Image 1 (spheres, rainbow, N blue to C red):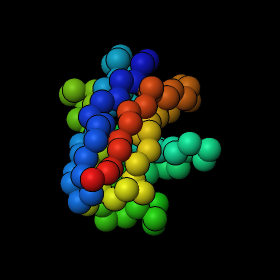
Image 2 (image 1 turned 120 degrees about the horizontal axis):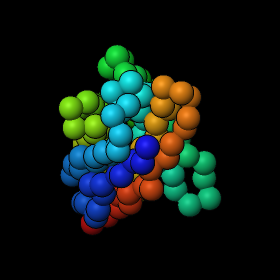
Image 3 (image 1 turned 45 degrees about the vertical axis):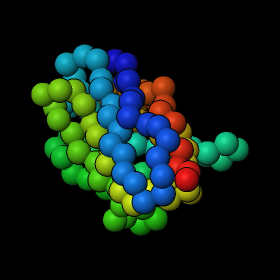
Length: 115
């Protein structure tokens, strides 16, 4: 399984972005999916997760501006980010835990928030 993330870019503060992560293979619907972000010199932090059953979790630090969803028919998970702030500048990664417990990372997509 490979994960292809897209949708990043340069956006002004207060703007919105919708990131997408598309998985190859038919086991996407049975996989746990998550979004992380990372800035230089720091660890990757969990932003959102969604189980195969559709249960969603957001860490308390990001609740309210981030929304994740999945479309199993398209093998795609989404991350909507609203009211973007400069501190949201990071590389955003999608992550999967497959039914056989294999862990897979996408290649990351850069989000830059700047005026």
